[in-house]
Length: 142
Image 1: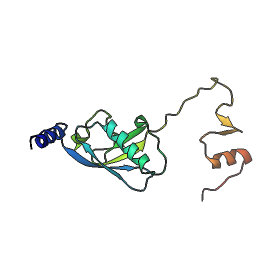
Image 2: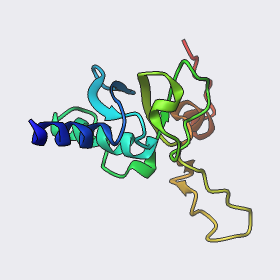
Image 3: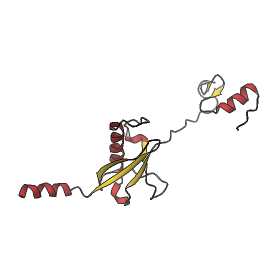
Image 4: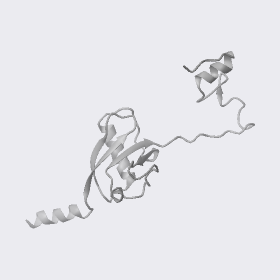
């Protein structure tokens, strides 16, 4: 009985456990797992990515938690700080999104003349704009 009480005290030393539901954008359904209220948002993102990969879900995300942001729809539109405690928000449902890629701004005269283009079309440009420029045709959008 004494051993049982010591184990119980050690489990409660870290705090209360909570069931977290993390929805990954583009995935079929949420990932659910148990975390401690004092766990950092960064460790929750890491755990969610590991569970996602273990379950073989698609699309493939990768394993670097620094590439992702965790949002709580109840708190607001801002991403949660990676160093805050997950239980401090009072919420249990979260959304995991990939960080937006930063676009590199290339000034004219820097680098090679056509490094931003492939066959006269810009990377990331729309196909409609390329066709309009190449053939001087007007392609309707409907």
